[in-house]
Length: 157
Image 1 (cartoon, one colour):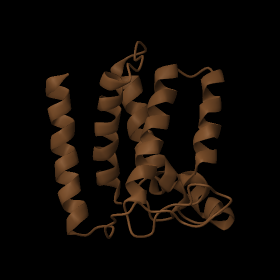
Image 2: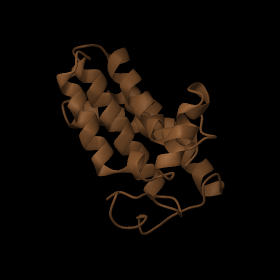
Image 3: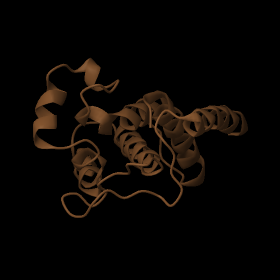
């Protein structure tokens, strides 16, 4: 999935989570939203040509020597490690947003043909039953729908 689709899907997930899961955003919507948007892109830090890896030169190349794309940073283990940030001096709503964004990214990539290594270091790549090609017409339609959905959710809530 491309970065703009991850951002749109993350926005839908983040807004829906606030409404339907009663997420505490008392630290502020911008802090929470920043976490969601960063989390929506963060798992692709392991891909040298991703939007987020272009912002932090060298690090993605080092990461890619250790982990293949869509493995560790797209896994349950990574999400569990992120939850340790709740004990750090970081606003809780930012951490919650970050985790929601990462999970939305993982679900998005599970909709693609390649899938993700959800159970890293074990198992193979896992996809949802219906998949599409990254960057194809289906993804373009989903981007449009997610963008409209995010705006719609903001208007309703």
